[in-house]
Image 1: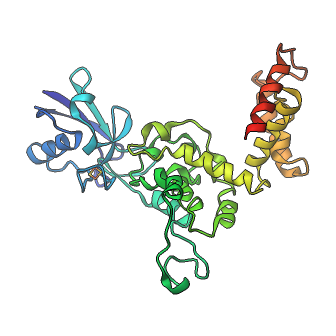
Image 2: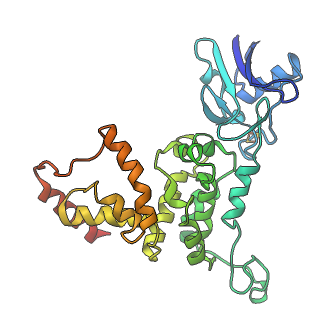
Length: 321
Ligand code: FES
């Protein structure tokens, strides 16, 4: 027996969501989705949630279980009952439509922006205008580069707990960027340069803050943050450097390579671009706030022992990559 505390919200009646408790005798081997269905079918037919495949394939049953997003159909209820209770809410970073159902329009619109289709010679669209519409074959090694991203089931678990998305809804987000990597690294796609240029704009690959939540929450093997890092690497390799993110990385590397340590006073200037006057002016309020809070880095850095070792290790690493 367990208490399920489930977030309820009916836009026709409620101004704010609230939690309602349901007591359920949890059958052995039941998933969280089985429990939601039992509650709906035997206790409260007004409870609204999504599901389809019940096999961790369609991605529609994602909900927050005890604070973090999971696929309800893939999650054993027994594993989530803590002290006789389980808390279930809608996934985060999305508008709640009703109870556990969220609006995924914004989420899907980000996929459209990364052009989730193969761009081929001639047409830009798979299968049209190509040489006799022939099958395009791919070696197992080439497929391996896009294998992880191909496993995405678009459940939005990664986006639910994405800190960058929470701070900026325009951020393309881990799911769409993982999808972008799937096409950028596809050996049959010819749109890499344009794709990477677009992805390097504001709200793209450089807006991820590496919090790693997406990797923790993804119920598949996508590891979205790793896919974003792969896109950044491609961007640097092909020379798309005229953006804050790439300048930041290059400035960072330059400091370590030359002096063995970071100069955090100069790095923001390098990242913004020394001729980017509006961008540099925009740093002033941030600098003042940091100064007032005592968070500004020291002008003269204290001596660090073994800086030569840092330089040596870094140079060795650079030679190998
Ligand atoms: S119902 Fe399809 S993934 Fe859970």
